[in-house]
Length: 184
Image (cartoon, rainbow, N blue to C red):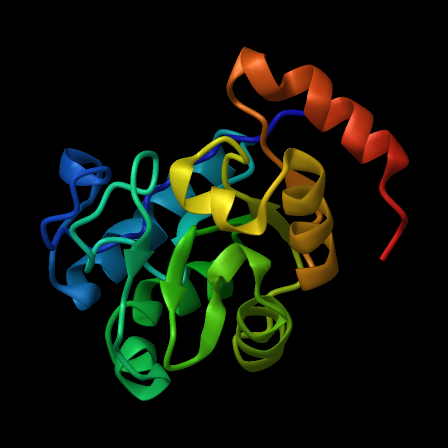
């Protein structure tokens, strides 16, 4: 599989994990740069992953270490954070990686565990037809679902196609749980 987990589509609004990986705070600037980035990747024969859907840049917390909650309503997210994602999807991004951020005005579950975010918004409203990737199962913000097996089931049930187990400490458990996972 030849797939880059780039570009970062999150807005540069002070998130400790995203930091300098974000292009800008202005969604229109990010949108233009994301489209150019995708053109370059596609010209080089590379597939792209937009991350972290629906937007991780507007919360301060680093989901590697803490839970993150974004209280904004869907209409505000659609008008701001989701603009570059929508434009990246229209530009032909092959994959989207989900955020471990919770948006309680939309769903009490983090986005990667949410059928509302994956099926209704990403696939439905934005028309995305590519691969949906859950962010790293070992991140602190992913732990709310319980065990690695429970996290895998929750991601698959929500509509993720591919999951990441980035820490060598959880790989064996993730592989065993994935083999035992019932198809959703």
